[in-house]
Length: 333
Figure 1 (cartoon, rainbow, N blue to C red):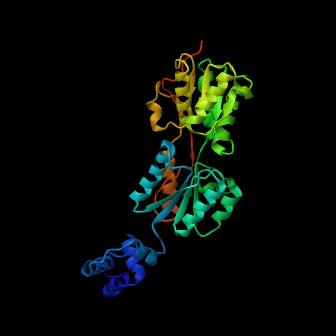
Figure 2: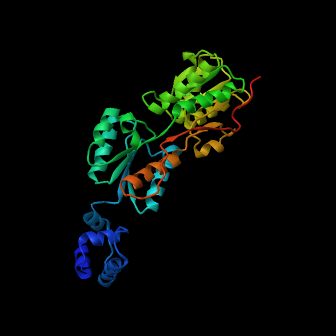
Figure 3: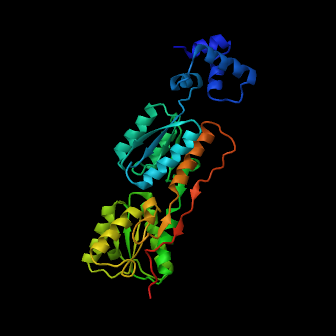
């Protein structure tokens, strides 16, 4: 089997020049490029990842750290990242952290050990200080769906406080005053910021926040059903329910129907994320759009711009959530 060294020798050029041809570098003249391609054809050489890495000091691979692999939210996120990088001829290596500090750190070290050219991270348990420390190493890092002031030029994030505000505001504008809230785990910045937005909307409408109408869920379907059960068991009075993500909203809606509630006439429900199944629930779910696939693509574009020196790439770092109105919310008289 022919080697990159044999191609270099036959073409009469350096290893670096062969690398530039393999990586479609514009700095190689057409004449020199053709000499290298002719040598490859004559030798039957097919470039592989190791050869590219050896000649270019790049592996053409990007590490992706996400919290989970299950569920549509992370599927959309990973699809966005992978599609953008694959279109540019790059590959991805995925691992998960499961929102646990030790596992997130272990996953980051794993990706660094694979000599990834960069790492895109969706991490929730490691501290800002840790991320700043990691950023000073040899492998560039980019943060997806998280904002760290010291790394702001490397962050793609959503304004979750605004999203939480919009969800509750939509109910208030439809006449609801007694609004229950199922939050996500409060150590997660997106969950805590969504709750802050909920409280701001209540305050603007002169409604006091009630701890009795708050349940801290787990961002899973079970969190929605458990939260609604607690409100009902405690005989709380409410006409509407905000859930901090669509999975919990789906769990709450299922529990409500199983216990005799007619939706939305007995209970209005609003979610957050606008995952694909939100439009197929019954009734279809009013929710807050979290453009996570677009955010994933944007993180990948940032890597392509910074690491692979692609030109004319426009970057949007902070995304704004929007209200998606469907059938799960009614007008309260």
